[in-house]
Length: 403
Image 1 (cartoon, rainbow, N blue to C red):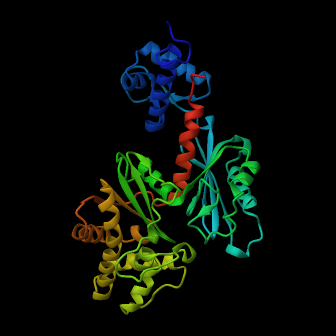
Image 2: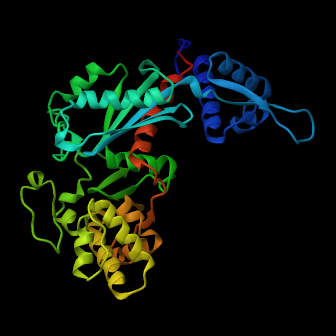
Image 3: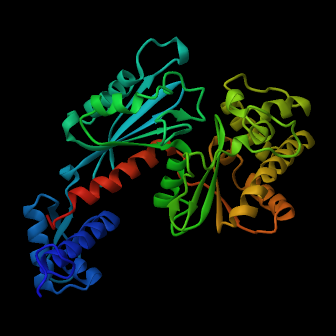
């Protein structure tokens, strides 16, 4: 019996598969000619021509110019139509909400930062979110209804059973069990939420140091110490969304922390978190320690230690590397990842010098021997990950020509 339209193997589905392959190639390579698309997809010239005409009529590609400087007639070039769809991302911290809008090619076209000064603000969280989003949408020259999807990145994780944000007591106003319903009522587009460190891992997997790796751990150290776990190519979130909350991990070298969720800290955070770096510097007699915020101070101290060849700074960097490796040893012993990505300003500021020290220490402390690399996505990595997540779903919806 012949399959109906939409069944795998039918002409409609095969056309949709070819369309998506061509669109993905245009996203990856930029402008391409019909001949080049045909070679990359294996399609004949007539089929490639029909495909491009179909995508152009659907508003998904644009004819943008012609090749020049080559033998023979100039060839028409095509690219994905940037206006075919837009997605938005939010990066939420206790100090601010950073919002951005990207067109379907991934180019950021609007950005807005909304200060949220902790418990002093009287603005409800839902209004904060919509104000930040509206600022980015306005900066992009768009309207809310132009946004196909929004991804919100926050510390902690929303508990799937209660709807309450966990592991983030330092984020005022975000722990209401009705918050997600309130956001759904206020936002005109579908939205998702994701842990901020998980989004950094997604950005590194799509754009940075973890491209091509299906099993890796990303260790993040900035305002907080956390990890993201990617197993079999997918984020592992855990039953309650708390996988990777390694700041709560008990480790040797620090007193046992009890009632960690009330303290919003734990052994590994106390041992190797950003706040430990200025303390260690003072103990070593290092002067000119920058004032708070501690995350910026830690990044400055680590960067200076990586470039300064005197005993106190060498001791600072070596001790910090040992502390980092102490917690990492537990992670890699359980997970045996292929790769560990070091991210967050308190890690990336140490560059290759810190990475090599942590690698050497880890090889002393764990039987598993993953390769350590420094993350490549440095500019607003949480926001970049949120945009990449939102764009992935947006492209699936917009590029589906089988409907």
